[in-house]
Image (cartoon, rainbow, N blue to C red):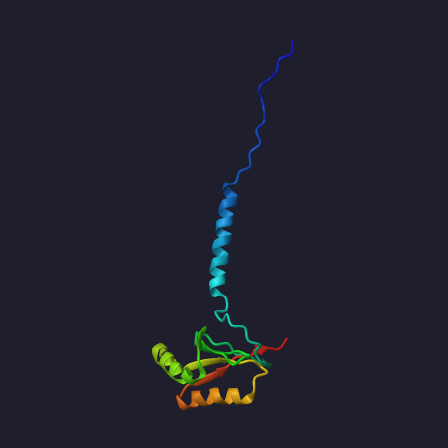
Length: 132
């Protein structure tokens, strides 16, 4: 007579370690994504051989190709730009403005923005990208 043993193997996959790893990966990517560049408005910047990075987060003025002006991601009309710049710099107590303007913009657009900065004693920094 044949005796059958009741030893069946049950396959199990331990997933507790996998959920911990997924949690740490999610946490890592959330932290890294908040540290990414805060400027969402993409502008083709002029190239420069030397780039100097600032340590502080300054007020950002972005100009698009179709002459839309953004003050820290908030669209502002050109005729209200000077008042908005002065108000924002006084609020932040920082008179440095990072100007992000496309490389193929007319020079007159750049001069107009620099004039606004000079009239209001603002330090205007032109953002560039490094050469590859």
